[in-house]
Length: 128
Image: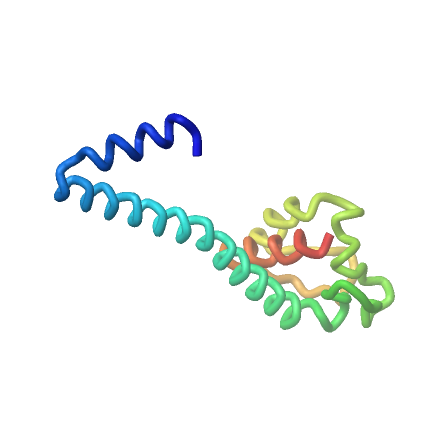
């Protein structure tokens, strides 16, 4: 505890009881809010990763290896874990939003909503 912490604690003790209780309550509320704000993004990120994986499994796993190991079922389809080595995976967002089109007939043309795109990109980022 620093000298400033001690001085602050001393000043709080000198406050009337009703103000000390309010101060203690305010500190507890701030601590709870800080804990929630720290935990919130990780839960949201975890949810996005699960959604992104589910999307990849549903639409992509027939051709691509979508996990951290294994070969792609279609030999010419790159494993998702290597996509970031070829180009920035964030650049896929626009192509997915517009309806991705490729030069090979095996890849279907499809468009997805922005939440699916964000989740899918988050999942791809988690593989590198």
